Picture 1: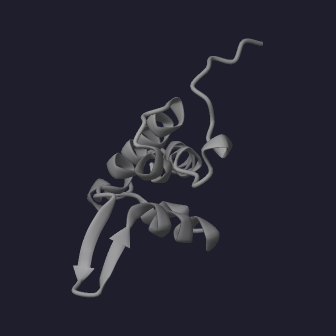
Picture 2: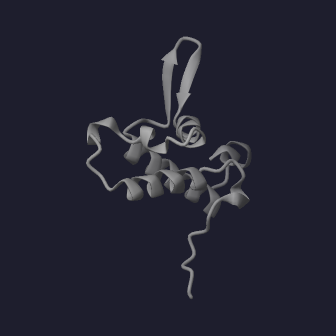
Length: 100
């Protein structure tokens, strides 16, 4: 989580960030950060966010899956991954069970 670099302390918010990153890694089949070339890197969260902004979030799904998934479930996992990796810790969801 970005704030972990500053505080060097794990919190519930850093755990939620890690869970979101895990969701994105598994659903996209990519690492969180990849070296593209000598001057630029690939950031998974930014890429998935870009797909979502252009209303094509399923483009971020792992191509090895060849579309063999429930699209509504894949969309939910990708969006939850983005929500959990929000740059502001207080904007991330909690892990509490909501009792109705």
